[in-house]
Length: 208
Image (cartoon, rainbow, N blue to C red; front, side):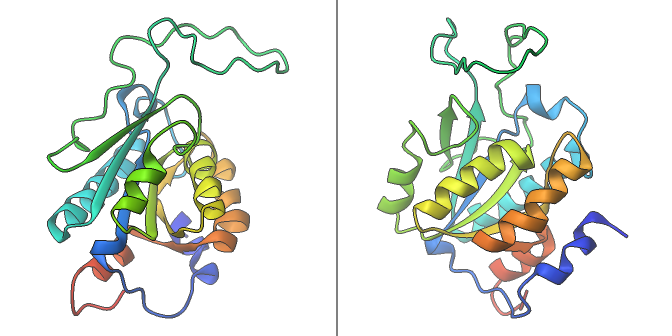
């Protein structure tokens, strides 16, 4: 049984209908340094491929595409440094760590958001850019499910956005880390769909 099929029971039964003029695809952290690490249950390559398909379809339909990446300033002084239980020392990111993978873009018309923490709203212009374009629905995907995606989703929920979580266009470092938010969090603040579901909903005359 695939991971996507595990979540079919929490999906809303009715067809999905999307208005590209009120929609934004928000792609979280598909950058070289993050995509290079192993992910479960979906490979990073498959997540990138599905996210790229979604982005291309959204661009062709006139929906707003937002590419989010994370990274501190060169001196690192705008990074978070909380007191935590001991962890191995972290070395500075390698050059190019925060660059988007080529399959994603950016392409003309995309909006790029650089964040300094897990969530994409705090300290960025994401909310401003969405509201000024009349966006009320966000399609979320990216890596990692339980860090960047979930943190952004919680903030979007508190700001009143409708949300669609694309299960097979997300992944995490472990299968359970991916499964928990899709099972217990995302169905309470939005709806869970697959890449194919969203693509069909963006194409006129084809029910999702």
